[in-house]
Length: 241
Length: 187
Image (tube, rainbow over the protein chains, first blue to last red):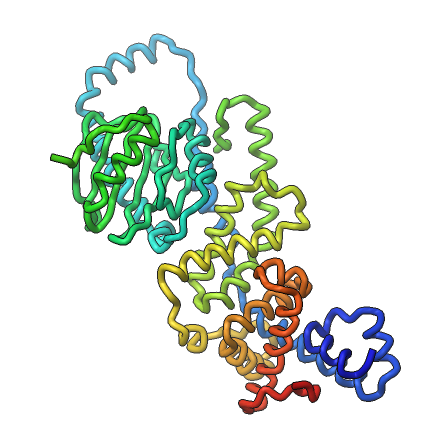
């Protein structure tokens, strides 16, 4: 190996020199000090690149992961007379509770999609693989007949006691947060406003689809696409006249 | 007390989920610092770098079953992070001046080295991304030129040229020269 080739390799990766390069370094008076100097410079470089890492980074990541994947353990209980009595009370109060739940769920979905750690999702535009969307729904026990296009973000999120799939649909008119809450079907489709966003909830399959955005321009198309995906049946969107 | 929810609720599923959780936590503890630094030098913003790392691990969690060998984890995570950054970048181009205006805290080395590292960091920040990124992967990530090439989807010789020129440029910046002439007398 000549000096030119040695120095070229040295400049590319001073830390990894092969046998030929090491032999040249050992025999060349001019190149040996250059190698020592280059390796010292790389050590400085490594130290400079090692910016301080936030102390709570690991815990923050693990908390975010637990929030999305861990849910309170709910042991099965035997249906005794206490449960029967409680069930009777629940049935009596069902109408009121259902209304309060629906209102609470709307607020929680809006809070979830606007939370700081979820907000970055709105910036995403590149489509995620269809398999990833199908996988997120499958984890929630839902099989999709189709995957609507333009899903740029998908995550399995727990919103309070509800389990959901949170997505962002990218589009030229701006992103739309789409949240499918499983096993909690709204009684009817309705529009509402929360957190400065226009929103629509639509009963779909066994759950409820929420759409939230600055504008409802894409809601009809998204509702149609997701109804196809979840029910396999094209219907007229609830916002259409 | 909490338990990982399983599809069928049987004990075996819970145990598998527990192992998966342990594997994930080990992955986070082993690689989060390095990934954060990589993210930081990609985007130049502390908060965004933290978000990128968090999102990277959340995506990794969903695809954890695809990771067959722990040895491949670092490259796998770096690839996810690069994609996440690209997705953000596509939507909101980062101001190119951001990274040079950073308040680069410098409390790891002794006081006598603070100024020196600060100057070097500013010089690294001034590098064009095409030079900075392979250099960061090589020096910080410990990847070989071949591995960096695979990460970036370019040839190994291109990586060798880029990291060579990156070092040249850094030396020139530190010396206060605009010239690309290398310290080793190479063009």
